[in-house]
Amino acid sequence: MKTAYLHLYQENKTAIHFVLKGAGLYAIWQMIYYGLLTPYGNLDPWLTAMVADHSTEIINNFFDTMPFMCISDGANGKVVCIDDKVFIQIAHSCNGQVLYPIYAGFLILLPGKNWKKLILILGGTAVIYFSNIGRVISLLHIQLYYPQYLDISHHYIFTILVYSVIFILWLMGMKWLKLNKT
Image 1 (cartoon, rainbow, N blue to C red):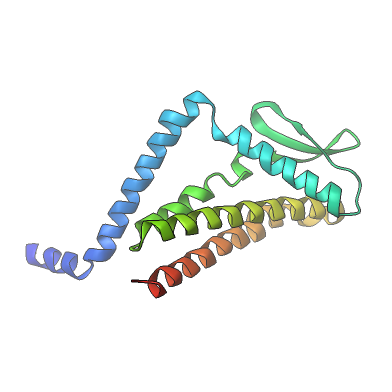
Image 2: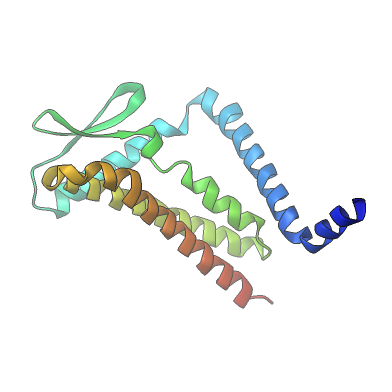
């Protein structure tokens, strides 16, 4: 029985190490986030404000719709208003904050040069951020013109789209790390 487990381990050693390192990296991120960042001012209010402000700024400057205004909703996030009426709420859980460590953590675990990983992480984080801005703008458009589709768009369609962007970024990153070995 012991040799069967040893044989199974030997056959899957790389995958097992990848998963264990990933679990360790996740634990480290949780300790940093909840142990260091949260007590001294959580990232969520800042990131939610950035997403909401950039989304409303882009809509107001580039789209011919009613003017949107972004105001704070206290600890819950930001709300986007039209004519002082709440139109849509951007909760802290929708600011994309959880996506960045998932994306970066996977790249950190891959073999390759650290400077290349840093470029991938910085560039990919920007792509994910702007994808989330596009998501919020699209949801505002849906709420304005097709409110019956808001729930399915928010909970399913755009979730799949944003995670697809991350998956494509991972694939591109793996290809670049592999093709540029020196």
